[in-house]
Amino acid sequence: MAELQGLGAQLSEAEQAGVEIVAISPDSNEQSQQVAEGLHLNYRFLADRDLAVARRYGLIHSAGGPNGEDVPKPATIVVDRNGTVRWFKVAHNFQVRPDPGDVLKVVRSL
Amino acid sequence: MTAVRSSLRLALLSVVLAFGAIAAYVMLLGVPMVRNHPEGYVIAFAIATFLPIFALWRGYRPRWPSWVALFISSLLLVAGAWFDFVGARVPDTPLAFRTGEAAPDFTLPDAAGRPVTLADYRGKKPVIVIFYRGYW
Image (cartoon, rainbow over all chains, first blue to last red; front, side, top):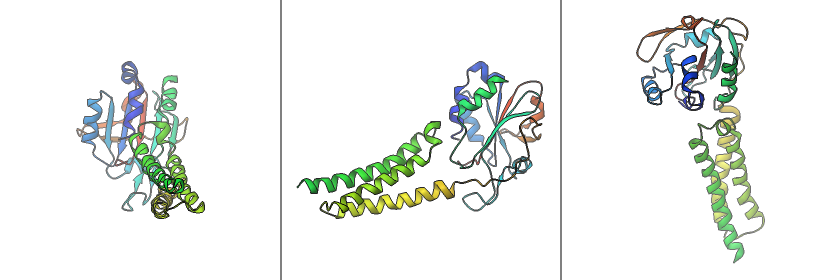
């Protein structure tokens, strides 16, 4: 949930309309969606229950969860209008997230 | 007399610094500067550990506040350093996507159960795709 703060909040309303922010986790996230909507952030929370999509991206941290389960590696990927990856950052320490300013700089340049 | 006050004062400072660092980190998780420098709390724990060692070395009395502070802060230092440098590390493994290439497509249900497909945004708008662990 902490990634909610920052990214969306730094976008103006017009910019929010011009970009889709898609947050993928193994959770179902009804609550996260409610919080995001309450904050008028256009996040879409997607449930990747079996980590199939994380696996397709090569973003599995095997046995990285608190109970030794597989978890996704925290990652932020900017995809342009043509579906091409323009920029990404994968965490080396799961406490660390890319600076929202860096992400938005890339998005604004598209 | 001054030595007694110093011993208590340094011990108290040590404990306040150690727990203050935890509180500050948790409260300021939304601030990238704080969130992205978790070594900050490890440094705070290291200073908190140094203070009572200094007091003991200088022979400040009574000694017990220094020992208590040293016990708490060194425990936090070991736990914090382990977590930051070992526990929270994400291993480097090969990715299956690359800058300049098409992002692997996917369809996943959103919070309301409606399917969302990445390719549907093609020609419409850029997408920021965030993978996260859910509970963190």
